[in-house]
Length: 366
Ligand SMILES: *Cc1c(COP(=O)(O)O)cnc(C)c1O
Image 1 (cartoon, rainbow, N blue to C red):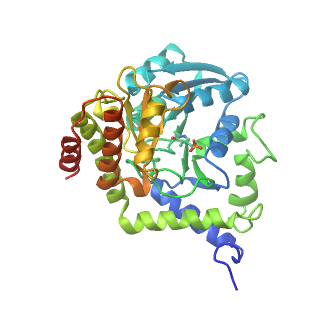
Image 2: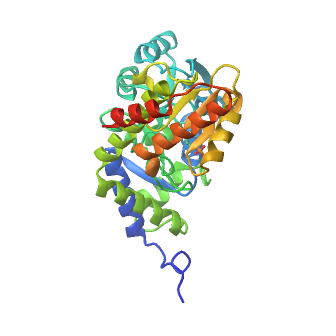
Image 3: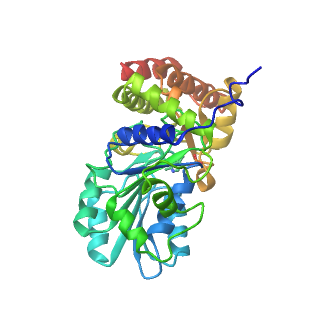
């Protein structure tokens, strides 16, 4: 008896290459796309170690926890790091980036997170791309939480290194990721003596052993389950229509925002302005004196399948994340999350209007 997950034919090089092309189309890029067998932190670290070196200066935009991680890697590479930190309840502006570039003309690398699922904000990559391009720095974008949730136009926006993962709005598994690499980025990485070579973190290995050879021989055995899952999630997005998938995420964010305000009980959107709020996930501020972790635990006791989680690290006490991405980007899931949070707030002595939250979310969605 064959097993659907175990008895798979080997994945051919042609099949692997076709998955790369479909991911490239999703990203709106003609650049090389390298699909990587690992969670998105693998290509993210590969990009930074490939682009940064002692003597280089990086502008690291910090709008959430991933930006902090990138800063640590950049410093570890010996780069001078200019951290541009903005409060987690807002987004960075192109003007702020332009000012930082003007203050530090030596900047040759810019790292930015497009959308942050962990803080619920999204940054204006198109406008930032313009100022980075004018300055001439290499532009790396972490688009793990934005891909399939909101427009992502890698070539039109001048992104040199764009990293995605399948596990958020794409509705796929963690464990497979991809990065697009511009011609400029290949040149810069090749010229960096400290860029990883003969290493799992090496983008250059993929270029030399896979791309330059015409994508005929894979450097190592492809992780079949992850590759087939990535292909299936791209196929599902193509079938539904990328625009439709993105519209579902935008509606989920708007409905969660409006519904949480209608619910009352002291719950409030964590990101102040709706235009700065990410379509992938909505963060909410717990009412004063209420621990977000207790609220989430009480809400999950109502329905453990809901995509609710307390914020990470220092945000754990005050932030609730509604992860309305992938198959959870539906009106029903949003309404159920609000109902469960409402019940939890009522249990903490809060005054909530469950019906207003349900109705407002539904009207916002429509
Ligand atoms: C989710 C996410 C990643 C991937 O990290 P995991 O926590 O392992 O899912 C990377 N960058 C951003 C901005 C993300 O939101």
